[in-house]
Image (cartoon, rainbow, N blue to C red; front, side, top):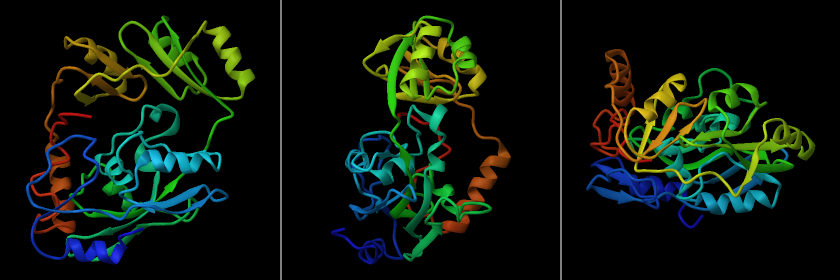
Amino acid sequence: MDLTLDEFAAQVGADGPVTIAGSGSRGGAVPDVRTVSAPAGIERIDAAEMVVECGAATPVDELLTALAEHGQTVSLPAGGTVGGALAVGHSAVTRLGHGAMRDVLLQTRYVSAAGKLTKAGGPTVKNVSGFDLCRLFVGARGTLGLFGDVILRTRPVPRHSGWYTSDRDPSELLSDIYRPVALLWDGDATHVRLDGDDADIGVAVERFELQEAAGPPALPGPYRWSVAPSMAIEAARSVAGSFVVELGVGVVHHSAPGEHHAPDVAKRELHDRIKQQFDPTGRLNPGVDPLAPPATR
């Protein structure tokens, strides 16, 4: 890394409002305060332990390319930086099969509001028990601490992976197809991603009369809603505009804003207590509220 973690911590310092700059690809307002940048670069890939360590400013696409040389990948959405993806907390469209993004992060060394370099989590998949403190930082948008570097859980590149389409009822596909990695419905067709053995995928393709597709559908924007998975289709249909529903997950990508329900009192109070513990003076990304309605993906 060109910038060391100690140098990064010195830049953040202990006083005054501060924000961190990534590639700016994930949207959202940027506070008009002093800006710092995190270290970048891949420190190590441990294929045997299925982990990778890198600076938070490392481009996701660069990381995916490097991991592919080892037959592995990581469940982060393409584009932008690793730290930006984790800070925003929006999982890739493969969440149905690969799980939420918070499960990808094993350890982080971050700079606290006091300007101190601090570690949270553990460096391997096996050595973490109890509550994982580092998971609080996923989706916190840099309001609890600023990512310096991270250790991420990787996964093998599947033997075979393909996208397919179907005009069958999307709810039936969700209940009948065995372990799909993604099911995306745009109101007309369902895009299905299947990973695994070529023969097993062939059986599913034949049984459900799936048609090959070049890839996933384009996700409309700029809005991204989170709703109960059972209500996602109904919610998407209730507002005029183009949409893609992540079936079984509860995420709706839509061209129009959806109805936003303010967090309940207990959730707001818990959020405020956590913020007070981690950043009592409110200097980290001031004005950014992770519980505010998301305007963009």
